[in-house]
Image (cartoon, rainbow, N blue to C red; front, side, top):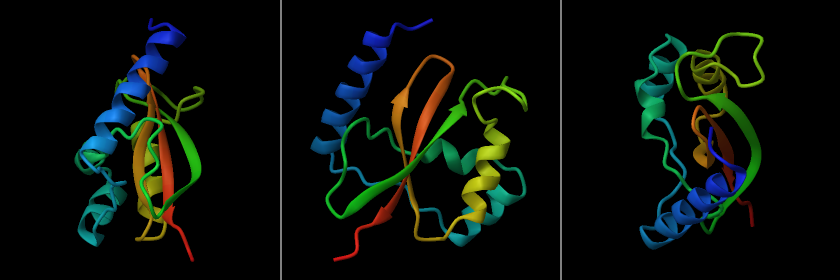
Length: 117
């Protein structure tokens, strides 16, 4: 099991890398969203790790605790990967997704929207 400090350190490193590489939240295409709705988990593997980094023009609106091991089951605190895929498929097509924290077996996936000015 990873310590809380190790998780924080990884998040800080991910944020620095995301800022340097100007990463943005993943916005899924209609085809990818259809794949997710059908239970295909491949598209979620492309979600970038943003850590604490918040790209300009994007606002974090929610976070989802998700099992990343593939061994989670319904009823556990972390949402299964299948349930997360269905959640993404149901959301607006303009939502962006990015990892905000990563542990050994679970992740927090941030749900982002474009800031309205």
